[in-house]
Length: 286
Image (tube, rainbow, N blue to C red; front, side, top):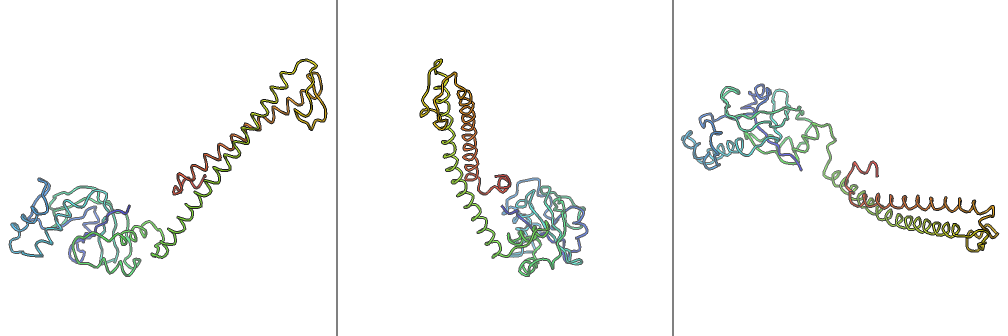
């Protein structure tokens, strides 16, 4: 989810930029006084504004009161904020770290403030032409468009800026990866079931063979056709082949256990691929 970003201008022509840099953003209209003492609604702020600034009427008064309302009540801790330095032609980007504060004297003629942690600057020329044009708005405070916000934050983090076509291509590639992982997951489950069944059959069969041999009575012979016909001879408890056969069957029984374990692991890994096709961290290992 994209973070909300606000533009708050540092006074006309950015003359308060050096005061903002100290860790604040602010707006004027000090006559409105402290708005933290009561939960003012937007209409109440408009009414208060008309009382404090009776010379202003109509759209201008409504616009200014709306800015005060947004600064006081709409902006929130954790929102991103930018301001512009016309001298260096750079945007300063940070994160709001406090609620609304009324503190006359902190910023010249701007008593309504919020504390900000500044995180870096972006040269205006690094932005796309469309973003530069959109940010030229003379409004003192406004919400930055989501796409421009993404572009600014990408530049701040050093990530590449993608065009809409490149974004679409990445999304298609990501969906293809997810689809392939799901298909591979089902294949792994199918093959894992086969391997598991093979291991179980081998284990059960060898267990039965061992039990049959162990139940032989002394000097009783067991036909070669029943147990390991490749031995080519009949065996009994006293025959040299008996212990070798037991060892071989025990080994094959262990192979059956190992095969069943491998099949179970394949089923689990396949299920993980199906359940978490989008998890990039899991992709590194599974």
